Image (cartoon, rainbow, N blue to C red; front, side):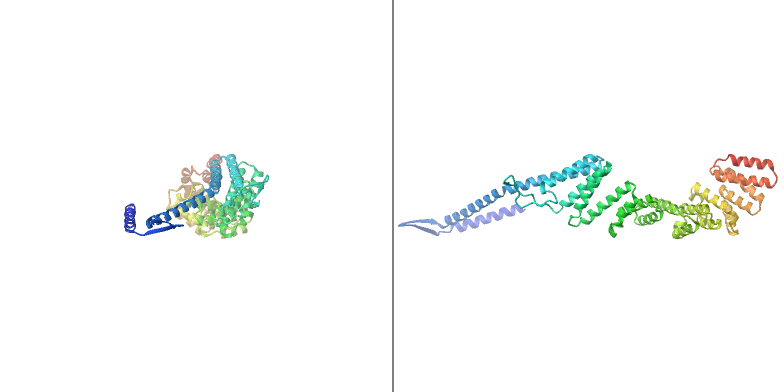
Length: 447
């Protein structure tokens, strides 16, 4: 449609020109000294003037194009070298991702050589018209604004490749150069590039098992950069390496809130770190302080509560305190026994069995009600049997323990304790044969 409109317009212009020129009878007379005169059509004069103007414009344009050919050729050569430089940098990145660290370092070095061939060394001030061997040479091309960022990335690639090749000298030299040139970057990516260099140094320190150095470098990050997931992950890793369970737990909580892990992985990590923090307590008072620092949801997690109770028992703490800490776990066990792993159920019952002497009547009643609620649960029969033994009900205790034994095949520690309790009951009623058999069964039960 547009071409058709242009064609119609062209015909209109041609028609108007023909009408104007065809009806123009004007004549221009040129007098030639002394007595000659030449009559020329006005149309011809106009055509000659327009032609001379177009010829002059074409000549000027041609001269301009010819004079700019050297600049265009130099610009073309510069673009070719820039493309080669960018190609070497992309090759270095590809080699590094493929694990070809030697080739990555070589390609990054070639990119730097191309850069210096184009623009000179960064710390070298080029004169306007440098003279070499008595003749003038063209000055270096004007360096683009992203030049220092490109050089910083190239040096960083070389440093990271050297780190993977365990070449510490090359790594440190390239990293130092990258940091120096990173300070000269201008633009929106300047801060991110420098922060990236620092984070990479943190990762190298962690790979070299230098958590103190890694934490010092993390503290140098700006406040906003220190809250990024990459920085928090490095802080978590450094805290784990240094053995600071509390800092690791706090960092993991932040990461979980920011959904840095899947829900299952985040819960498992929090459980592990909280348990490690509780196990690091040196006395009962410190353990209680750690326990109070946990929130209610964390204290109800079986793995955490068991770790606290076991540590309390190891430090010689109160059995009543242990039972109180185990109460949320016990409620979960009663509500849904399969919600706890078999090893966790066994640990809960062993700890409560050891604390029966200090349990109040409320706890004994809870145990009996749980056994009545789950009459076929061998583990609850075992614990209620020990509770009956504690309440001086030997016949009921013996009956419950004997009923529990067949179901304790997968819980050898509980099975052994049950045989030992039956042996003591047999000794109380002076049944030497039954006591001997029970002690024998307890001794041969592998825990």
